[in-house]
Every structure is written in structure tokens, then in C-alpha cells.
Length: 457
Image (tube, rainbow, N blue to C red; front, side, top):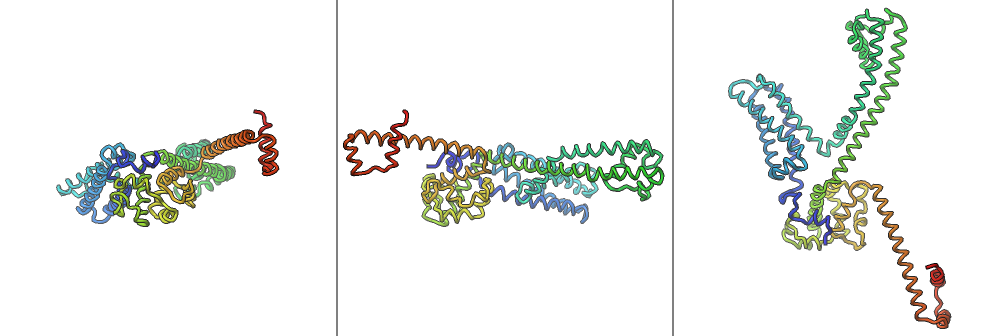
């Protein structure tokens, strides 16, 4: 019999979380295809500004891209329903796609009207249309959802997380620069580079931050300042440069890098925690795992074809009888072959099963040592393996072992009491002495009996 979690996750053919016609790979294929379309659209938008600018061919190509966007939205609405599309797990991305589609349709519509009126597309007076056109590039943001761009996403999250540190770093840099600018404005205000506070501030910024310390004629400002006002300004320039370069800048860079890395790791941990808490996602992945194991077992052992639809090599979970799944057993030889399939490995990645936990996975899941796995053992075991080990896991095991120790000690005491009671009931002292002579009792057992009898009740 399948347990509660596997039954809900794998056996139910009427799950509310996953539509009856849902295929876990369909949406992934569509997203991959549309990622290519978005990239082509972005390239075409750039080339249309230099090659045959204003040609009607570019408008036709834009119309093709809009049709592709429309097909994508219709496909996802048909796949998930209106409620699933606008209120489901991916509602933020779906709404983003829908808004971009509407804006792209508006832009292409205006371009077609201008084309029919004989107005070239690049000469349109509607600047808003060009802004809308650039909004279509924002669909590239969706590419960061793919595992290929995982490192890019981590860098973006780290950069966003380090914005607060960057802001205070700017304040820390501006304050000493402002003090130096005020000092130079008061002391050498006759110099054209320091004749006003804003000009002095900009000059100081160029000298100590950007490294461009020259005037409009290309002459070094510091050298000119030393010749005009004395060596003291050169010494001050050297001291401030050392403090800014080797002191302040290094501290800022160290703090910014540390906070950026911490923010990226925190976001990664948060995303993993959300995945582990997402029960609908777990249900979908568990159902897909059961389907893949059943499908691969059919290829290795056709005798498992017990239910309806078993003759199909690409079965759906809805087409498999519950009795078939309950009676299905996976041997270690079958498991070792199936677990190395690419589709299984990708699914284990989605379930956050660490690669090091997949070594000797069959021995881990086969808790009863029967040499084969039922689907209940498979699904429950894999669900327990999700994520990294936590302190709570260690404490739970420690408490279970302690409880087991108490149970063993209690059982030992009861067995000894039972042996002692049976011993005194069926033998008298004389018979006991004779029994000792004929059948000596082991010294350990005799000692245990006397110790238990002497122990206070």
C-alpha cells in the first residue's frame, strides 16, 4: 500500500495541482523555444537600425515575432487554464509576458498603419512607440530562469544585495572629497580649476577617484598647483592619494565583495527553501519520478506491464492502474540502471537531491533489506533526502536512539524477570541444586539473575 505522501504525489489521477493533460516537459520545451525567439528578436531590432532601415521586411519580421508571443500565451493558457496562467505559481512571469505582448502588438500595429500610409517606420513621430519597442528586449530577463544562467542570476542577486553597501561607500567617498574641495576653494580659489565649489568638487573627484588629474589643456593640475602655491599641496596630494587608494578604497571593496557574496548565498538559500516548501511542485515532481521509473522498468522488465496503457513506452501517470503501482517492485539491478538515466538525474536535481547522496542510494532506501524497493520506499525515501542535512535531523535521530535504548532496557528487564519467575516456579531448592550439577547455568546468566533479584524494586 502506498503511503500518504506517495499516494497524493504519485497515484492520484485527479490531482488538483496538476491538470490531467499536463506534461512536465511541454512547458520547458516552449520556454526554451521562446528564449531563442526572444534572442532573435533582440538581434533583429539591432540590425534593423543599420541594414535596410525603414524597410517593410522588418515590420513583417516584427509581426512574426508578435505572432510567436501570441502562440506562447495561448499555449500556456491552454496548458494551465486562465486561473493557472494569471494566478498560478508563475503568475509574475506570465503577467510580464502578457504586458510585453500587448505593448509589442501596439507597436507593430502602429508600424503597419504608418507603412500603409507611406510613412517609413524610422521616421515615425511617436517616440512612445520606440520606447515600447525597447521594452520587448526586457523579455531577455526570462532567460535567467534557465540553469545555464545560474551564475549570472547569482551575480545579479549579489549586486542587488550589495546596493546598500555601495550607497554608504559613495557617502564615505564623497565626504572627504567635499572637505578637500572646500579647503582648495578657500585657499586657491583663483585657480580656474577651483574657482567655484562645484568645479573644485569635480576636479577633486577626477584626481582622486577617476585618475584624470589634468586641466582642459592637458597639463597636470597637481604640478601646476605646486608651481603656483608651493610644495605643501604636493605633499597633501600624496597623503590623500595613499589614504584613498590603500585605505578607503580597499576597505570599501572588501566590504562590498563580502556583502555581495553573502547576499548571493542568502538568496540561493532562500530560493532552495521556497522550493522545499512548495508542496504542489513536490507533487508534480514526485508524480513525474514515478512515471519515469515505471516507464524505464517497462524497458528492462516487460513483465511489469500489468495495467492499462502498459504497452506504451511513453506512458502517463494517469494511464497506470493503482494496483500496478502497488505491486511494482524495483530490484537493485534495475535501480542501478534506471538511476543513471539523464531524465532521472535531472529530476533528482529539481528535487534538490545532492549528488553525493546518490551514491549507494539503493542501500539507503532499502530500509528493510528486502533487496527490492516498493514505490512507497522510493518516494518517501527520496522526499526525506531533499535538501541539506540540518541540525533538526541529527537531534531527531538522537532522540529516536535514546527512546530505543529505553525500550531495549525495559525489554531486557522484563525478560530477566520472566526467566527468574519461571525458574523459581518450576524448581525447588533441591531440584535447583541438582539441576546445577547436571546442567550448569552459564555464569553470566546466573550473575544477571542474582543481580536482578538483589536490585531494589
